[in-house]
Image (cartoon, rainbow, N blue to C red; front, side, top):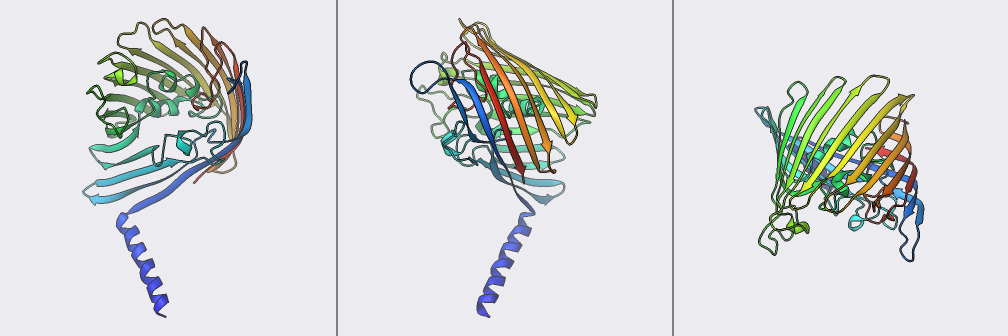
Length: 368
């Protein structure tokens, strides 16, 4: 009897804590598929190599997270999010990088933030996605996933200066929705190593992120701008800055949604720039959709003339609201020293200069 009363008391304590928290949600994605890549650099010797195996997070990185809100009254709420990647197929596979978490670099390192939201908008602080990264996920028919994803040619991952997808020590303000228009302003105190916020040269790399988006009816349009200062932390000259902007838009005709994106990145002290173009389409077919895109990456910074082109096609088939099957194929051609491969955002995939690459995947994704 005493044990039963104790158990009831413990359950009651947990219930009251959950009620006090107002709303806490456990969510995640488990994504596993078979992938085949060609045009890889072999670990030893010369020539090219290929990979075939089970891989985690092909369409969407496998992840698990907690998010919640607390009503503070007067239209004001506290919000939080803590999300970590994990390797659903194990870490001993291509793409099983990021310290064994398969995406974002470590435990709870995808996003982790806390803040306030109300009629004034939303203010959050922590580790956040760059607004440009969020925009490219939304505009890419492949959603920054599968073998044809925009990451293969994106300046956010291929610029050679810094990975611009996420940043630690970031504060952000998001405006309310004004008839489909929202803006984001973010500031990063340190783009470098979080455990060593003061660089050995006495400077830190700071960043500004600006974004404006319009989504109303069939129309999608937007622009974003990123600037990172003190780029000597990433191998450039003292006080140098890197600046990048995206222009993007799309229109949903009903029978198909057509999108386009242009990106440009420049760095102080280096002539030229890096560019990316993308055209894509999503065509509803039955309970799924056909996905297609064509993108070009061109690097003419300094003495480089590297260029890569990617053509990709895929299909998603919905089994339910939360579970879908997917397949995709992509072909990348490299010239003038470029060495991009399918799924090239994974650090274990290294391409061979001026050598083409193909990627094929077939998998299943479940969201909860």
